[in-house]
Picture (cartoon, rainbow, N blue to C red):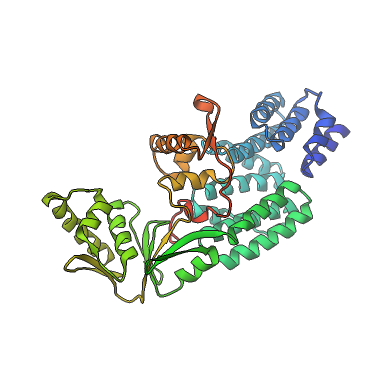
Length: 406
């Protein structure tokens, strides 16, 4: 490797893409093309970066498997940052295995963390945690230590474990300062905002207030029966009943939870669950059926009792009933939550992230775009959607996530 290539690689490692381009911008050999691709990625030109990396990979010879594998890893990182979640994960796994075989432990570890961060992004929390590397490994550079701690913090935040997240972010900050890479330092600071901004709204006794993540954790440990509209479950003292696939039942229990300790009229429940403005006997019969199903689902946590006017929710062991909601009340809040990371997303990546159909996501995007809440870039298959981060709110509890026992 010649001196210019070495100097450009060191510039990229320290977060100086312009310094790298000064040394290799006019060169067309594969190593220079790869470094130019990484530099363009750091500058945000992902389309140009991917093209350069693919040219570099094709230019390396049959005996340069490590160089080609590094190009694949770099392209996978671009895919992650640009939210191209459909990028072939098998190619990254093959590249990681090649790097391990040839003794490039640092880049192999970097490839592993790209896999882990993708798992975390699409809600595979347990898989991400099982894949974590030993943080005391000798191959860990300050940059890798930063990424490791960010992943630990991300898992802890999604599981509402505030102290674990706080400690991990403190270690990530120290490692990022040690690495002296501005982009890493900025990423840690952005991640830290999650702990100090409202993460949910609490409705109880007819009043609402915002909660930070630490307050949500305290609420989960309390003796309250919680109707969790962030994850569509009803929980109490570690016991959870998921109603994720039962939207009508969840609409009923949410209405009952918001009215507690009072009852809810039958007409109000019909309007809430079925959108029935003028209820007839068929609606009332359906309500009786759904109330019966709700009783069976919640029998370990609460009773649903008929009153003169309607129904009331009666917790069996909890002292009170509260409803936990997203901090932003919007019909398309889940899509807004994903877009609020400031990155540009395709509709297919959003569908994968949210676990729904691409057509459903597209309808939400069209509605949000018409109301001016999001912006579109490009056309056709290249179209991407984005929005500036919502000021004053974290999106953690808005994102779909599996239950702690997943």
